[in-house]
Length: 446
Image (tube, rainbow, N blue to C red; front, side):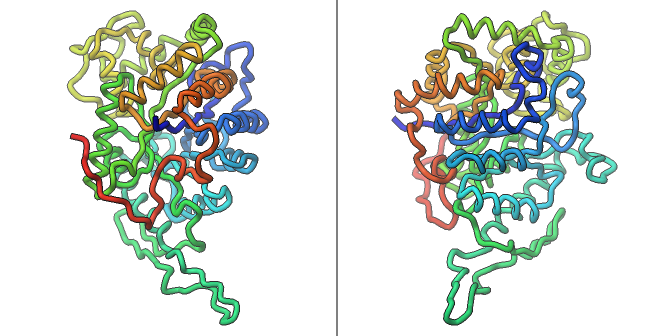
């Protein structure tokens, strides 16, 4: 049986953002490098492929109730890569508030210094407050952000490809170090960027750092099909997850790529304990930390429902939902996922908030180690994903529990690697290396 990849999110205190209120949780852990180094070592001991951290370039209002994303992920995860040997790092970066040349150079350098363990999660920034941090009077609209993101990724990938493999000759006898005819400018002039190139160093061990993308809108899906190596996604039902994966594979093929050149990593919030009884007890403790009235208001707003019409215990049916997802919704993917759950039957806002791990939108998986392993195996065998990004409900507890209790079961079942299968992240994900031919797809999902 072919196995799947596993990433672990380091979001702290957890994907239940109010877990900091629990007695055992250090509310300042998200600023503590010793805490993160310990988690990284646990993940590497379990042969986890990579660790991941979401981020945004602005302080959001939620800081009044819970810790924010905290430390810059490039600095934090760069440190974690330095104290580990095989663990990959997936670092979130904004295409809205970055320069493509600087980003391409930083991640090419990171790929060299990590010996091929670097990945960049390219996101468009949806937080309007970010504009004022970068000298803009207003935040770009969604359509503009995705046009910019497309051009951004085009520039970055061309910069990464600017050096031919044999550009460095290092001929000591002649004194010729590099063949300039094999180092290429890109001379890009576009709507948003003017970039000459090239980068100052050749490509790293992966050829290109792994590109991760997470948007669920049409603009995000286009980016995924054309550029992404890994697509991070959300789904509350297996049917929706399978349909999404097939759609991305079709888009990749339409862009001239092999469908297997893009992998789907399905996000799942995991709360795991030695027994189901213990997991259910902890689940109720986490539910008790939630500001349910505010989260209900946010949920119903994102679904396009009238303000104040639905309280926490009022069932929402499919007939209550507008025909389309509101344009101002923070995440189209979360909207699609939640609507699919409501389509199966009426759900109260409280149920939806709880099923979405306190408002994160990702599916909550609660149980013993065996139950969690059974669930991931079921979803994988149903064709929902090529692997999972596991998002601990309470990171202080669930990252270690997953690594030490669930992973050994998956390994014994042949679903996950017992040893690191390749020194690079690209190799472990089964992704092609740039400039190496790939066979044309025999078939594309219908």
